[in-house]
Image 1 (cartoon, one colour):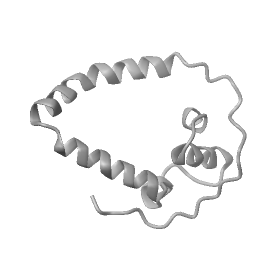
Image 2 (cartoon, helix red, strand yellow):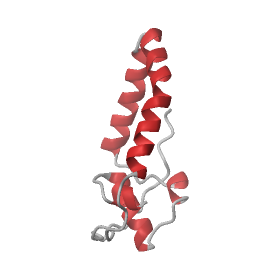
Image 3 (tube, one colour):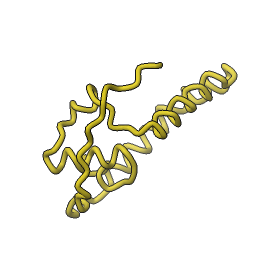
Image 4 (cartoon, one colour):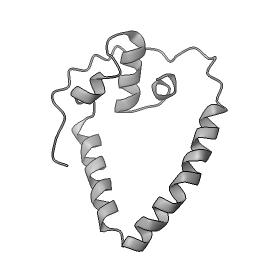
Length: 101
């Protein structure tokens, strides 16, 4: 959560709410903390994935394990001893998650 809270966007705001005690991590499963703009971008990414030729999908899947290991190693190397970012007072009251997938 600390890493997410350092970022920007909907998930960073949610992580700051969790760290501030205004939300629980499992709330993400039951409430939408994502703006319509973010959801629309995610749906567009899903559509783009499905539009890829099968050979490109297979190449991306084959490279995923190595890319994931690299990202995990980079995250493990981060110094988390810094103080968490300032809380901006977000208090999301998201409704139910969009279920059009």
